[in-house]
Length: 85
Image (cartoon, rainbow, N blue to C red; front, side, top):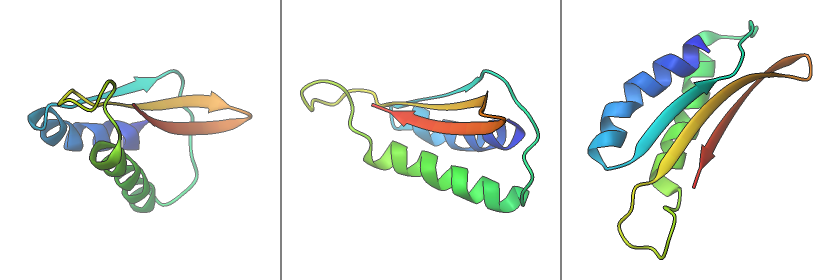
C-alpha cells in the first residue's frame, strides 16, 4: 500500500493536468516481500500505461479517463490492480 500511495501521489499532478482522474483504493494491506524500487518501477509503469493508453468512456470525444489503483488482500497474499476505462 505504501508503494501504491507513493506512485499515485507522484503521478497524480500530471494526470490531473491532462484532465484524467487517478485514484487509489486500499481495501486492505499486508506486507509484500520484494525489492521496493522494483515494485515501484513495476507499478509506475502499469499506471503510466493506463494513463497513456486507456480509452476514455463514450464516443471518443475528449473525456476524462479514470484510472484506479486498488490494493487488497487476496488468496493469502496482496493483490494490486490497475483499472482503467
